[in-house]
Length: 236
Image (cartoon, rainbow, N blue to C red; front, side):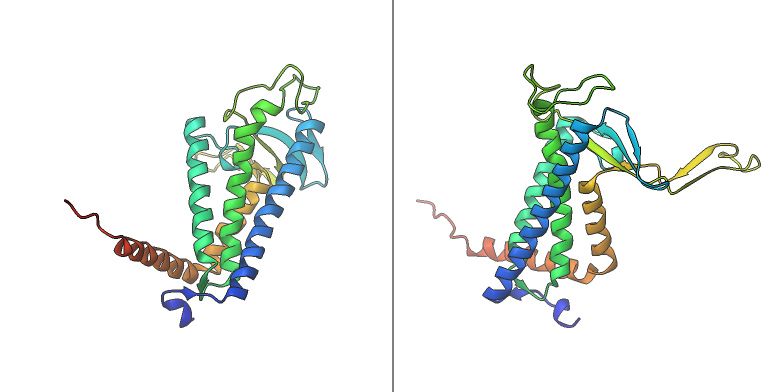
């Protein structure tokens, strides 16, 4: 704990290599699993199709414009380009952080999960509108259709399918505001990329909050050092 309270120092070469491989493997694994499941669902399910696996776990195919758990708050292009910028910053931070001593590997994995999850949904937004069509149910989508995709670049919709209706009930009539209304937990439908983001954030909050502070201080310190090292241009 004492080590993590100070600015992180450069790590040894062997540790850097191992951490880099682990982070890369996590990102690639999340992206691969996420895209395999999405492409399978997209080409095997029609829109809205619900396949019960158990009473509390379903595969239900829906699409959304890009927010986690199907939420839609901002303009599509703003959301996509904003996410690309965030992923770029996270990758830059990871490249810097794998070289720092005093940061636990679990912290790097947490950040890698968040970066991979965001990147997974970016792929849908950027490419899916071009490589898939959008037929009416009960037909399923085709990949690389001869007549083109359902939209343009950066206008694709994110595929969601993980649905966990753990329990439901109707609120008692005497309850204010919600009385008599139906309630379901957990009603959100999400994908592997969303799950990776949530797991990464939860890990940071629960287990690696101290590492977050150390990493931020080290990144800020290195930025200041870079500015100090710049040679000022002399005026003639």
